[in-house]
Image (cartoon, rainbow, N blue to C red; front, top):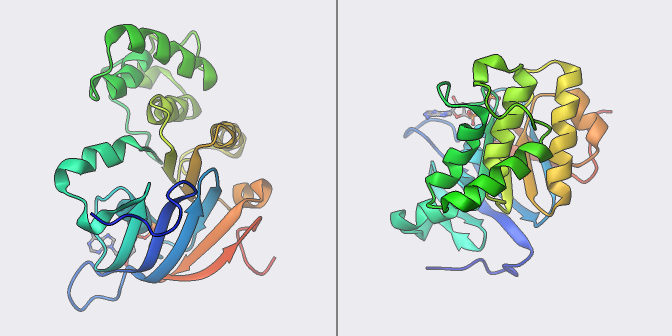
Length: 240
Ligand SMILES: Nc1ncnc2c1ncn2[C@@H]1O[C@H](COP(=O)(O)OP(=O)(O)OP(=O)(O)O)[C@@H](O)[C@H]1O
């Protein structure tokens, strides 16, 4: 197995000349992307629909493999990573999506606890960890509710709690505010910012220009699979 050539300790995601082609003859969804994300960074991935943002996130999760080039996550090269090691890789990555993806028949508590049960955490640990993370995301007192008894913003907080409960070093967010109004979105961003300040690297794909402009974090822009901008403390549109 090859290991990331840079210091494993600071670079958490590295793309080396990565191309992804889904179907033979199709134009690349990602075209020769090279990028390093350091531990503790907050990175926005922006670009029009179809520019390759979700493909980028899927490569990090090893849901897809690069057609050419190398992807390193947490020091591991994903092209040569054995399939039996993929679950351990994914334990290092929390993921949050636009559509929340909660289990509808489970309570808030159970939705978050489930993430710990599947990785074999003991019951006593689950009983102390879940209330802590629910408190952190602002859902103390709502443990027994089902997802349909919560607002969209609250449902996204449950999804974030579930993604973060195991304290992964990396949090991937694919349009996490896409279904939320601006005020609720701001609350979600404050929460992601807090999580980032604990040292977790956050990589967030978004179309939400107001949020990108307010947060002033690193902005990586894709356009039809090519990286056209990588700006520290950037804004959504490069012309502003
Ligand atoms: N599973 C797939 N099979 C074939 N082509 C795909 C697949 N997934 C994505 N694509 C293509 O790859 C390109 C990039 O898509 P991707 O979903 O990564 O873009 P995106 O920037 O996330 O878009 P959106 O903002 O709409 O989610 C598009 O041309 C898309 O049609």
